[in-house]
Length: 340
Image 1 (tube, rainbow, N blue to C red):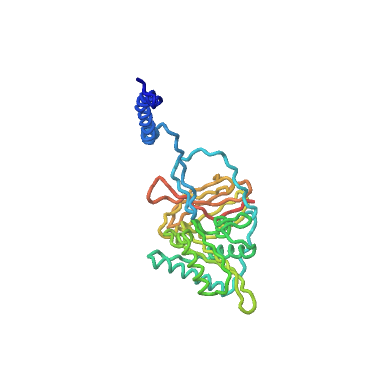
Image 2 (spheres, one colour; image 1 turned 90 degrees about the horizontal axis):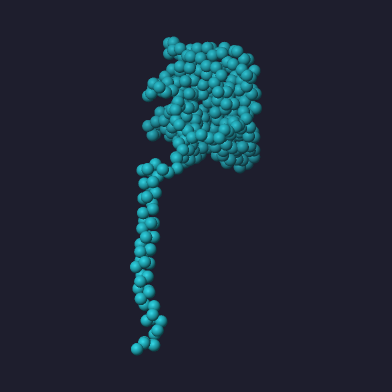
């Protein structure tokens, strides 16, 4: 006798029972795929080496101006880039910064003293002052004041490296720069403390101040105090740090005709090796146009460099041996020259 009370249930129960193992198998298969996939991909890419190639790039330029080092690092191929144009002001003579009043020079000296204190209290060396760095710093502070901007690069595209190369005629070294602007009633020691504390509270500026390699510091400020009761002032201050490698005994001329022979006599900074070579390098494409070996004589690196054309702006650079590796050397920038 048929069970007429639930005909559907009696006819479909065997089919449902037969589908259960298949559904369970498919569920296990899907779960297993997602569990096994990550380690399988790792094995595929890193053990069998069948993944995408990883491009290797050389480290970028040191933001604090460390010297180029001949490391032979491999870089990935990049599309050719057109170098930026050389700022036209590099071909012109630069007037020195205006004379600063006593109150400003005292501010500069106080900032220098507080900066040295931040170093020595942490067991680091003091920084010698250098007139060329002071004038370079003062020139930039006046430029910011006169053109109403605040930063490391001028509206014409002149940065710290160009300023030092253009204005300092004796230094071969690497650099770092701090700048700051203050508008307020403070002056003298309080203003100096405000500048230094602000730099110390900023990681990048603090690194410059406490950099173990730095040997010299120039502080230059420019500002104007408003007139009348309750007057405030607007002050720009610049710190230019340098790790000196060598010093030209005589200022190197800023301009010269093609074929001029420069007599080079370089004294090393204390603890640095003597330079072994000097080169004339294009600012346009970094190509070396002329170079000369330097000979060590009585603690001085001496030689003669005959500059070559075409006319344009160039920098002088020296090769300084790496005392930790006889096969490597530092390439250290020096004064800029204009060939006419």
